[in-house]
Length: 87
Image 1 (tube, rainbow, N blue to C red):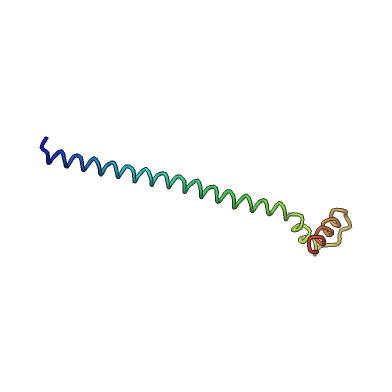
Image 2: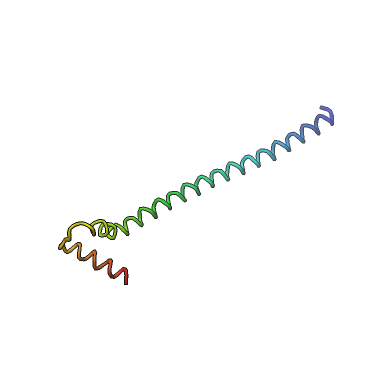
């Protein structure tokens, strides 16, 4: 092997190493990005369901507000809770 060929082989080997490092970094960033995006959407959806669960009694009360007046204890407790919330 001539010195020129050896030099060319070594430079090609060095370029292949650099390329491999760049590709591994890109793969790592893509994985982290996918995990972050999945975590982000799971958090958003979870908070949405949590907010819905927390606000459900008030939504039910407001939905039933225009209907006939109910004398059930649950309806009166919702009304009291809403009044306490608005204070």
